Image 1 (tube, rainbow, N blue to C red):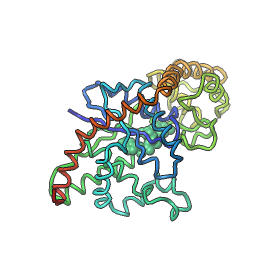
Image 2: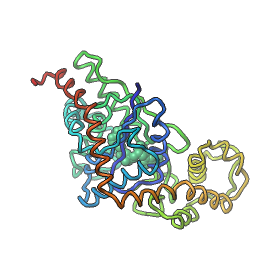
Image 3: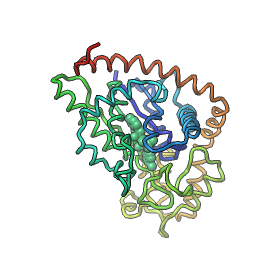
Image 4: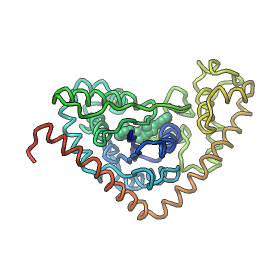
Length: 332
Ligand code: TYM
């Protein structure tokens, strides 16, 4: 059976971008003939410094977000990365397969390291090799992600191809990125040229999955827009990034497409559209944040789910790692 793997980094809470670009899609793929494996990638989070208590809290919050959104631990494997040592072990092999030149081209490294790349951690540089290990330790065939992860998934294919070639064996599959839906790249509410991100300095730039109804409505009301009315066709959004973003968000939340939304709201002003969007967002997100808050009251239960998921994950990845070691020539 085709196997899905994806992950979210606990370097903060969940945003609407994570929900629409990732979790909502993960839920849709669950029980659709895929074996689904979802991870909280805590080893990736520490590529930049994390306060240990905050990391523990974020790890549980992301697990709660998965469950509250509809990931069922009876249908999917749900765990945190550091409990399955195979990820780090396979990443070491891939560190020896991937080339410096490939890693230097990663735009996410350049963005995150900024001007002072000499001071970035070695882990941040090697980040995509660990990500390839996450995926390939399960021989995953499909990886649902937002648009920003596309380059990392291309690198994953490059690593698989080079490994297979270097050892003359068709062992690791070439993974398919699954980047679909109306909201593969949710933008900041303050700046239509920037991605909505948990690390943006301005809280007004994003909707957090833990925001209450008033906060969500307030952020949408104050979201940057242009002065024109909404167009009646998608091509009318081409040079209007803020308008396009709000329409994309609406379409994704309503489980429809941009053309269908514009057929309804084309010609209306933002003063009319924003309250519609706020109402829809609150209707869809409030039940999730309420359930997240409830789950967060019982961290032991979350931990037990993650521990159980880690055992299931290890049952798949341990034999694949052993086989990899054999192929590479490690004496067992
Ligand atoms: P992370 O934690 O930054 O984001 C988690 C998922 O959310 C998506 N996403 C968005 N989608 C649309 N609009 C946005 N504004 C937005 N912001 C985030 C991301 O594309 C991602 O799908 N490197 C990954 C985590 C990872 C991973 C993996 C993913 C580690 N190993 C293996 C897939 C497979 C990351 O940092 O995601």
